[in-house]
Length: 404
Ligand code: HSE
Image (tube, rainbow, N blue to C red):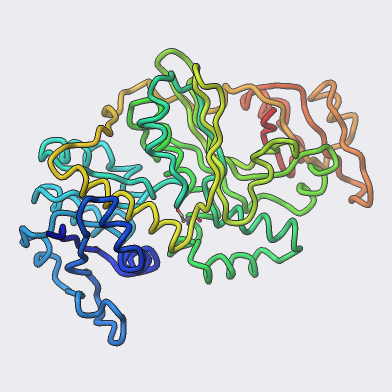
């Protein structure tokens, strides 16, 4: 007897899920203990000629009301219709899987509570890092640890754009167009470029690592639009690469912080070699030390790989819940990142005397054919508040944290 499933949404990820289910049907049946049959695909259009067009329905309630459908994969995206449909599927007693980070970051704890009440699973391995296993390692393999920090490159589009610009000399516009064509970018790529997508993902990782919901609205998200080609050159001269990182860490016994910003990371670090659409995520635990997860962070089939694996787990746990949970938000749990101490890379139009007066001893970066009115330097370790105080009234063109 096959287990019946439905897909909500038939875009990049949805069509990938249908493809992988069909292509790997035999192995999936072996791993799930029974075949997984795609009974319905919810899609606005009829898609004549599509190999799965016979399963397309336009009315969500057909899926909701069919008791044969036990597993639903949400591939619509966003938190409008997707939120309503996921709630209704869980309430109808169906297992739900998704790669929708917007939904999980903002409503994960509520949806997990419904799943718990209904004794079904709500799984979202594909919501962070595309095809990279990261949710299960955090919630299963690393649970003996007190996790202190999680950080990494968690947006494939911006990493692809930065790599194309740095390595291939591509323009920002061309690199973005490529990322869209390859299915990496969000429907509105501003969410990628401005760090919002990475911000949602770091919230999910922080929720899982630290056990309490962090609202994406609290998290400072800075993307790559402020990264200049000269920043890339100055950084390279002192042995660093610029990468957009999401980072979350404990700041006290009951407090955590999270943020997204471009960082300078050493060219000797593993993370600095995570290029193109690849993602790299480092988790630090008190027993394990550091552990890095690497792989394809976006795209149709890598994301489908994680979504289908969740469907297989639902089939294997038809009558049991996989433990996945975090607590409701609590005032005072989240603190801003400005207290964190780090060195800073600064590019400025101020005079050397002004730099010395404000920042004291700094490591000046060698100048080559750079504009005569500009200096770049690495500061001594200081907090974000101190950086702002030192910079007051100065012409600061870029300032990025250095991850030492
Ligand atoms: N737009 C996202 C990215 C897709 O580029 O990483 C995967 O979450």
